[in-house]
Length: 95
Image (cartoon, rainbow, N blue to C red; front, top):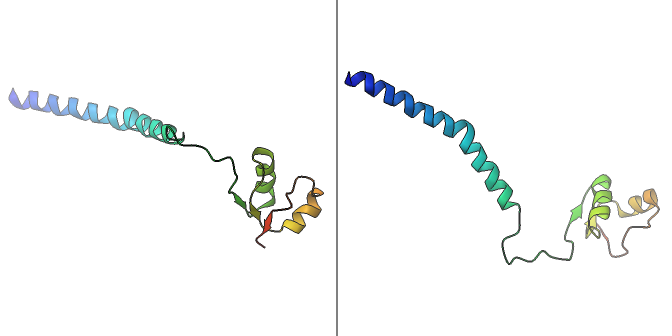
């Protein structure tokens, strides 16, 4: 009788562990990542862009989303490809 109760208790414990492993733990990990993606209270988001782009496609996205990257590769080629309208004169060419 005691061994039957012990077995049933172990089965219940395994059931709880499975619930934690399959449902609660991934939920907690997802929530931690979600919360960590927001700035800490009191932390100021910098107005100035400090992004460097090595790829033209990424640079175009940055020009649309941000003011502009600080540096990028192939600035002259990018200017000739896009017409140079959105490219800052202060953009540093890193090759």
